[in-house]
Length: 203
Image 1 (cartoon, rainbow, N blue to C red):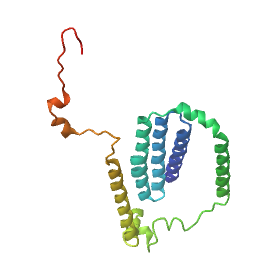
Image 2 (image 1 turned 180 degrees about the horizontal axis):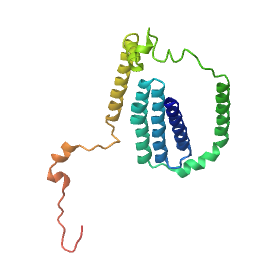
Image 3 (image 1 turned 90 degrees about the horizontal axis):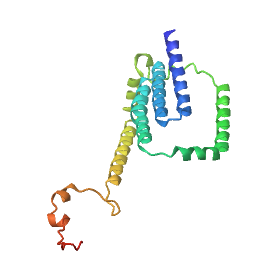
Image 4 (image 1 turned 30 degrees about the vertical axis):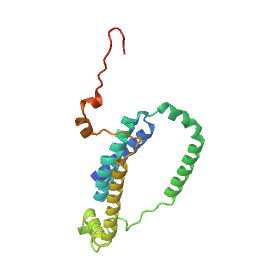
């Protein structure tokens, strides 16, 4: 009974917060509603026994993606009037896509069936899933069968991070950067020019 009530609570708040993300006119409030939707989705994953995915949703989406969205919305000077003017221009195309998506969702729900073995396979294909948590089962699978692929993916992320840092700090003649050492060691004649001005003559 408590499990069902908790599920309906998380599901209701998640759906309402997702609707508010779309309908809210203030983009900052929309991002805050999005964070609430992510937290409720994480709660649903915990109820399903997938606590590792719930942790990923909180850490990655709430802690990184949603906060990044919030900083971008607050710091960028976005012309929302121009965005509203272009809304009517692309409204027929967007409406057509919405109808196609709605039809696909209806077809999906009409053909949806519940697999009886789904709950038994939710952790990992190991002999006894009832004695092992979801996080432990994923760890056993990643660090044994897929350990080399896991290391390669980490190496790719490291290369991407180093490349982003190199591209950010590369020198360009069109970009002026502040050099503290040059400013500290400059001489007076480099920045100060004394002019001899005649009386009533001006410069």
